Length: 228
Image 1 (cartoon, rainbow, N blue to C red):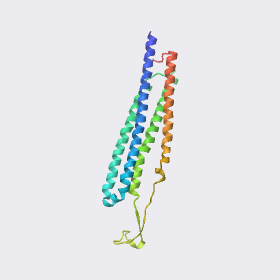
Image 2: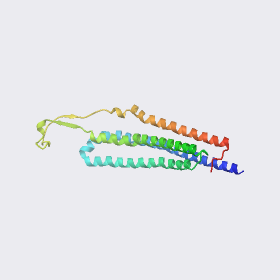
Image 3: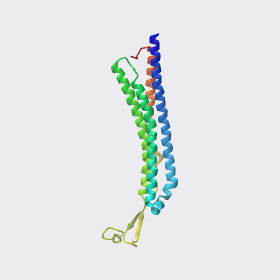
Image 4: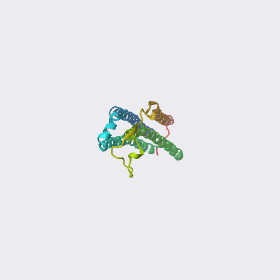
């Protein structure tokens, strides 16, 4: 009777680990959706409103344009930190459950199992978080910075400048250098580089889930008391 009660407690503890694992997994994929929405929404806004008007805005009010870009990026970084916290909290709770569970009566094997589960879950979490930080958050500032930095370059003759290197009043413009067209790094095919680590992290989640099922099955079939 006592052994059966201990076994049920053991099953319940493992069920709690699986519950936290499922919560963590769900949060990761929800964050993926949020990051993707942020990226494509930001890129749509930039392409529709910013890109066609940025040169005019810079000419009309350079400081206000720079402030507007900086203000937008500031809120983008806040969003990134909020999303990251939704990934870290479930992972920490999962880690606590794993640390408090006895997977094997042998101390060395028990420590090895715990270390593997904690390392694998942390690795997967970081892969999701860092990949989509690069995709959804860090890519947008690069696009905006390129827009406000890469304006037209006016070409003047050498005698258009005074001894201090300042442009003389009424200097004649010889030509304008401006890069046109889209960059190769903005092509849709380039985003495969973000998909590869996400697929690898997904494989890690599947593998973790399979290992937890194996442990659950082992406890169910062996009826071994692993709780001290």
